[in-house]
Amino acid sequence: MTEVPAKKKTIFSGIQPSGILTLGNYIGALRNWVSLQDSGEYDCIYCVVDLHALTVRQDPAALRRRCAETLALFIACGLDPEKNVMYCQSHVPAHSELSWLLGCFTYMGELQRMTQFKDKSQKHADNINAGLLTYPVLMAADILLYQSDLVPIGADQKQHLELARDIAIRMNNLYGGLFTVPDGYFGKAGTRVMSLVDPTRKMSKSDEPNSYIAILDKPEEIRRKFRRAVTDSDGEIRVDRENKPGVTNLLDILSAVTGEGAQQIADRLAGKGYGALKDEVAEAVIAELAPVQARYSEILADKAYLEGVMQSGAERASRIAAKTMRKVHKKLGLAPYKL
Image (cartoon, rainbow, N blue to C red; front, side, top):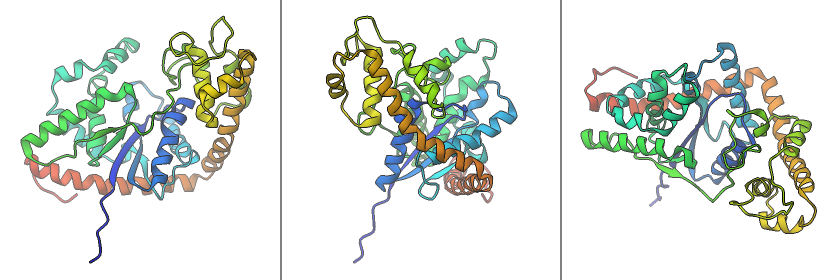
């Protein structure tokens, strides 16, 4: 008797089309996505979450362009459109529809307690729109729409995943077997890339340009930013996250890029000064990003290919989403129609 292969678990993740994906995105997310793809153990769905970007005012032409550029970066970093479902969020209307339905089962208190809502409300005090409040519901819809088993997340996203789990459990209790309750995927302990200006904070594309390395930064920009990276005054190269966060961050980045242990690097560079460390990490990052940048330029130049990837990905995602939406419509008592 032929043994039926076990169903693969589904992984979902997304990145906003900010136009600036950083070294932190590359090391912390994109390289890990490629590893998940290459493992052959999962069905992976990777999304450019352009609807989420609308909580901040956007230039329409720039947003459209950045969606294509972000997808091109996905591919340039090693993600294969044949092995993964890769698409733009707004191309699958079921995201928005499910977000409304989930919102009817989400409590105001849950949303008002969200740390990100409080932070973004302070940063964008002139534009505290309803989308900032309901953003986590759309994120829950992104995840639950594909019956995702696992969601790769960082520490700053745990609260959002917990809400998605709470909504799924709440609706499953009411209607029975509606959604897969997702778990966080943490994989192997990875490098958390910190800001070059304030190494106690995560590297973020929303901070000032000198605080992050963009994947598409030119070599001279990368060298300049690393030379200006905050360290400390004692001159000793050692791994010490509490007392030497800047130096430790540089060691972690170099370790992540080269595979050499951070402590080994510190021992090897002992007595050579921070300049040697900064130069070495800069050259290693330049070498790591060079093939990604070259491949990105090739993909972006082939407009027909990129449009085809977007179209095919949206069609594949829509077929998966339709299965969930048929179940949701039936369970919630919505009038039937063919999806």
